[in-house]
Image (tube, rainbow, N blue to C red; front, side, top):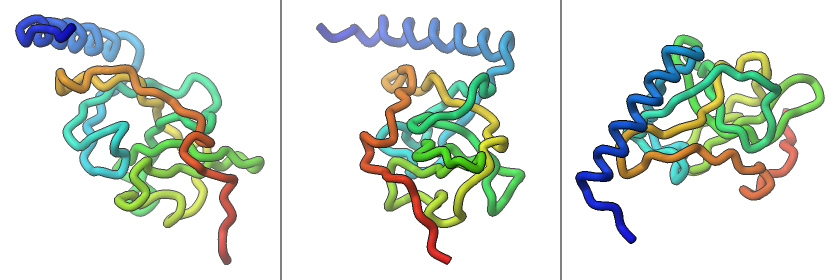
Length: 146
């Protein structure tokens, strides 16, 4: 049974207000998705809630990290692997449109600034962000060429 448009907008508004309240209380940050690298999970124009990492990252987590090419900018990627030396391999779900660890190499796990947990806007895309195990995407432990 489909939800009526007026009811959908009301639900979206309530969820947005709750999400913004969580933002104020728990150090949760807002994040706007700008490019297609995380399609289909995250789309350009999605607004997310990102919480500080409270545990070690795991394969499948959707995380924010400083862009190795421009550290003043953050990027959002999915953790494909966590390596023994405290580094992680982070990739976009849309590999054709993603500049990620396949380009700039492994990242220090300590650089993770947040873990995405909720798309709160636009209303038609409101949902919790699923943190798939990386194996479901066909990732394997990465090897690097010299």
